[in-house]
View 1 (cartoon, rainbow, N blue to C red):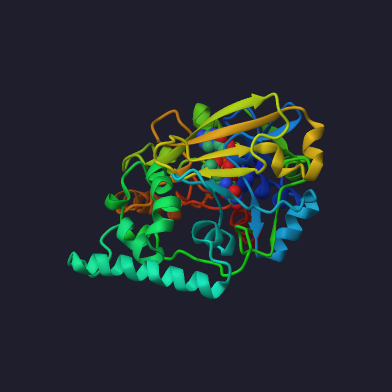
View 2 (cartoon, rainbow, N blue to C red):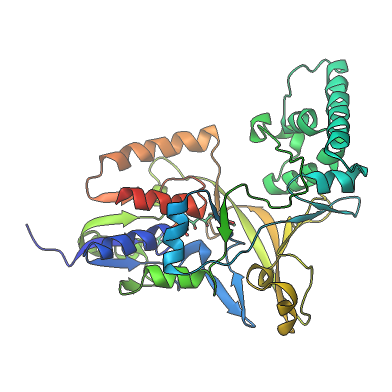
Length: 377
Ligand code: FAD
């Protein structure tokens, strides 16, 4: 058999590809990583604007309950203590802490103890269920009815309805109930969004994580696998493919659909625009879903005033079309059926490993991506 130049050609320098390359390189394998973008890092890539790491493809907060994954990423670059505690600006103009916890209930109803909050929540749920019953509805038929029966009218109208409608581009009454199976509430004054034991941001930004993973590995950016497929298919013993699976198979079963986010990023001549990294806008009247103020991911306390500028991004949830970034797979029945056909072909490949969010057509957080690659080795 003819000797190939590399053991692995890794298509995509995102977190999956970079972690794979790192672990293969450690085992003495010769890897070449290619990416069609002008930079490495995939969706976790940050751009330096005014000394601030701007999350180019959406805010990324690393969180995990898996100590091995946490130790792994921290061995590449130490992480800071960032804790995600988003705030919502509601249609009534007031601010509410998220996730739903004692602070939210105090802000919504002026209740001060868990017992008072439980009583109010029960009253709200009961009222919603009774309203539905008197309309002859016994089982929630859509997301609106599901949310009302789980949490009641006040929280639904102020904090869920408008936000969800903007995210999906459709009224809640036309969205399936299963999207919201549970609406967790916390009977403590705890604004930490995640339940995981570990969370943070790499000190110095995500590019440090990616650069650390790819250290000593040959990388070519601005290089599309499909630009010269024949060459790339023959350059290595094996291919790790982290691009779109439908594209790999020439869309023969049809195109998979996505939702995406459009970002409007602005540099402001002030140190502190909103006092928090993430503010959700839950009113349907405001077209964007969130404003991200990037410096708060890495700068804490009064140090935020050391930089006279700040960078914010408004996020608009958008239908995906060709040429846009494919962010969130639409895992409905139609798309899932198309994916299954591609997946069947992929399972038969002996030379190609498919991995990551595009090749598996599945939304993955960062930590599960790393866990998956560690398990492969
Ligand atoms: P990607 O990062 O997409 O990498 C794939 C790479 O392949 C890309 O660089 C692409 O250019 C390249 N590629 C594709 N096709 C080709 C080709 N033909 N030739 C060459 N290269 C190609 N996770 C969290 O844990 N916390 C968060 O807060 C969080 N927030 C998110 C916010 C948004 C808006 C999105 C979209 C995702 C978020 N994630 C978050 C998930 C996180 O982005 C993913 O887990 C991670 O990026 C997956 O890495 P990947 O390598 O699979 O994919």
